[in-house]
Length: 177
Length: 284
Image (cartoon, rainbow over all chains, first blue to last red; front, side, top):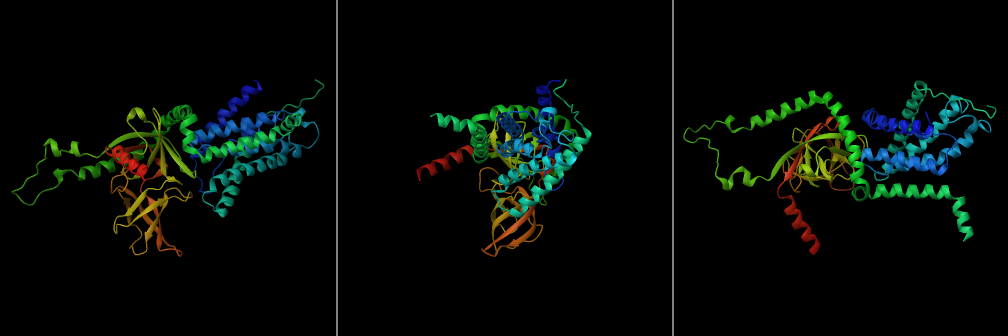
């Protein structure tokens, strides 16, 4: 399956899961579980940065359309799409890994811990920006912090389970084919 | 000139990032106007279709609750039948007045239209409900929405051909006026965005007598809802130090978690009254 087609399926899958499964779960008022932005985490290493941001924009915009609340997730997705390349540059264990592997995963990032840190930081940025935009009319700082931390923890757990359940096979590619 | 191009090329990503962010924030700030102008109809058709498909499946799981509340609604309607009341005086008898001039039809102000809920949320800070009925089903913006047991759900804010969007009471901009049934004090409703089904009623003066469990009803000051529809029951009363008002926290009688069907209140006078109000506002 081509990379393009695979990502389109992922896009639809994540949006549907987010809208019709996770948004229906009411764990606690402080916690909103998010998984859809794993779509951005899983995009290939070698992607144009401008394209990455546009994809983030479309992803957030689609989710916002379902929620009839334009702008919030769009802003958060654009932010993590912008930060992602910097973070990958920082986190990558050795030079040239992005040519050997296709996309971020446990294996390509050099273990579970670096990958979860990578996911955790992006998630924290996503949730913080999202809840900040939502909370600015209410101005309750304590509520904002608790919601960010709670949602990030639950989302991280969800992502971890998703990674274990749907292990993405990563081929090691070298120049010597 | 060359330097400008070089600058744009060098910082292209940063510029793109900021412009996308600014656009998103513009969307947040100009929420409803943008919705209608640019992408309302198109995106609503798609999300509406997907939502309807989903709802066709999910509504089976709520049949029990829907039935229960319908039975309750029926019970209260049956109790209002004239046949249930016996006049102690044997001289007078019940007659249903059928003269056209003051028949129910002529003076009827509010009529009920039913609609199915296809999408509903309670977890956001601003929650919307989508109904599978729109312009073609005689809906207009500004109509009131109540649940099966006649308690307030929200107000229609956007109407499309086959779908309409309701701003539920669980929305930060939702400020309808509520009234305490016992003392008659009126105040404004506001949701703090935290707990679903819990709303605050502001501006109740401290001279009012409030007890836990008191009913809060619609005031009938607007053209949206008739007077006396249930909104909720008082749960907690807070005294504000800085001013002379109580802040009353109450639990809504509508359960926003499992809305499946709602009624829309069609006020026959709404357009006329709003027209007059607009005219007055323009004059001053």
